[in-house]
Amino acid sequence: MKKVALSVMAVLMLFSCQNDNNSELETQESAAITQRKCATQDVLEAQLREDPTLALRMNQIEDFTKKAMLTGRIVNGKVEIPVIVNVLYRTSSENISDAQIQSQIDVLNDDYNASNDDFSQVPSVFSGIKANVGITFVLEAINRKSTTKTSWGTNDKMKKTSQGGIAPTSPTTKLNMWVCTIGGGILGYAQFPGGSSSTDGVAIDAKYFGVSGTANYPYNLGRTATHEVGHWMNLRHIWGDANCGSDLVSDTPTHNDANYGVPTYPHYSTCTGTPVEMTMNYMDYTDDRGMFMFSNGQKSRMAAIFVSGGARSGFGS
Ligand code: ARG
Ligand code: ZN
Ligand code: CA
Image (cartoon, rainbow, N blue to C red; front, side):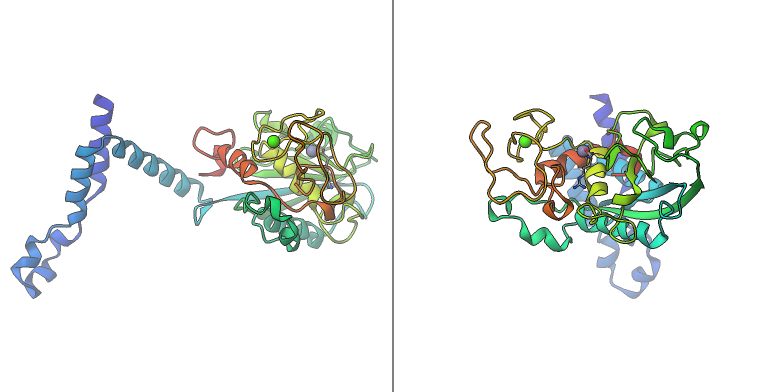
């Protein structure tokens, strides 16, 4: 109770009307002007008396605003992710160009803002749940390091200076991406929220990064990074990594298994309810040209990690 009362006070103190002390207005205009109090304040006070929870909500807005101003990363209410790209190369083709790196950032911005060309190809059964995630990515720095390693594997060696790799830059406030030869037919891998910050980020093989240069068909449309960043924002594979498994998202259909290539539509699941599978989802395993949407349920799952107290709250919101 006492806390609520203090919160009400705090909110009330935030509001003051500038008109009261405007002497120029007072002299130039009638006395009625001086008596005019800002109604905002009276209305607010009445509302606060009627509804004590209003103060709590307003305090939350204040917290949000403070945080947004601190990080400077909320733009028009959207989360903006600064990106650091760490390139490890032995051969000159592994040392991909700035242009190829920027092409990957552009794909992320398209795919996470429903501005990808193929978004319109989402079948009508899913048109009500196809999402504009509304997260933007800004390339902040490119770090390059020459190495003698022919492949890096999936044990985070590329993230460790002691192993010849590059340590992440400010991983709690920036998305680190490592571009290198991974090997073993692996396109890329990500770390889910909750892992050690010293290894946080995504690793993508140079042959599947961006849309130009060394980007290799059928993984030459930058969707490996779209998929990996989805994991980094807490999304699971759409088939839940098990036959008829759960991806913890309610609006995505239950899939039998991973789909490859570009499945013919409609592809039916044999799981409960035999739904049409959402094979065009970024969190399936199809070729790059076969994946072009996130769902609204996936969007809320991603948004949840950025709120105050969320696993990636350092990024804003
Ligand atoms: N195999 C990788 C993973 O599970 C990436 C798959 C990406 N698929 C693609 N079409 N680019 O994280
Ligand atoms: Zn994956
Ligand atoms: Ca699901």
